[in-house]
Length: 226
Ligand code: 1GP
Image 1 (cartoon, rainbow, N blue to C red):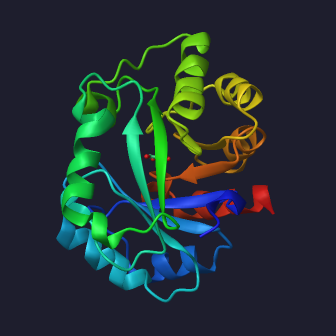
Image 2: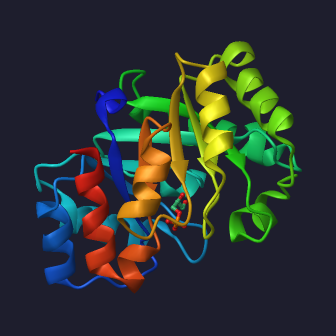
């Protein structure tokens, strides 16, 4: 799965409701892929239920596997996040080890990608869950990104501002420092303007919450990368 070509991704939360017509509109939107993941109330059952609705839709469906129990066979791609600025070792290398312990036999290196998360909204649920040190200087963010890419050899980095719009300068500086890393940006994209702002520097923009609050606004973000 060549995620490096993705410019736009819709992130779907298994714990949130999405009716059939909304899902069909997302499938027709022209997005490059669906990423399934979330923080609250996500379990194997609701993850599989969402996967089953998207299976065969013609667009790659990837699982962001943040809990070892959520390993489900069949996804086109698996991203295994490691939170580089997490406050506890479990979110850097503990949950991932458990995932490989139980499900390593399901993975092959062609469809599993380690993703270096940098959590940058201190108010986000993911910051609380991972104990992330989320208030960082620009230099610190770049240094975390360099550590992830150069030291841990992570091909992909994810600047995670979940729930709020981040700084385009941060995305720009990370991309300038690491032109070979694939940089995902997610957080607060709510329409064309914010999508364009972040798509200028990020390799892939991730559109999440707005899907559930303003579907039309979410759908409009795709045209920015076309
Ligand atoms: C969340 O980065 C994604 O993990 C998208 O963020 O929900 O704020 O769009 P939003």
